[in-house]
Image 1: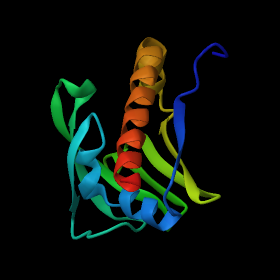
Image 2 (image 1 turned 90 degrees about the vertical axis):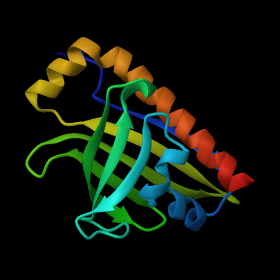
Image 3 (image 1 turned 135 degrees about the horizontal axis):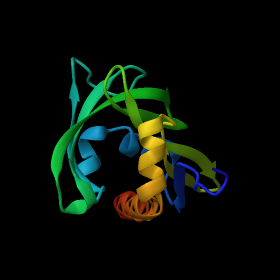
Image 4 (image 1 turned 180 degrees about the horizontal axis):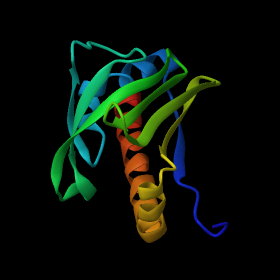
Length: 156
């Protein structure tokens, strides 16, 4: 399996904004619909009202921007203000994918890295073997679009 593409990817972009300003944007899941080409809305669930480890939210996704459309359950797994926001996609017992943002002060701005990481369970490894190259490119394009849209808002 050494030829198998890593089940992860990331895109980094520098934004002329403080880590605090970027944090406020990336950790507010209710705004993701402004930026993501696939997730067009999200809402905090189960009593959660903001970013903290264990908080839950649901993302309304239109796969590949065309469908099918479905809700994804998400749980915040890492939350370090102005540094790291990560969440798992899946149920309480099965995580399928992880998405996150790493923030690093960079001069007068912030280097923002959006990333994804699939869980290494057998079904996901099979999926990635068959569709990994295509889905990886789609994810990377989507992350670039998301970061470009965030950058436009933060630098306006």
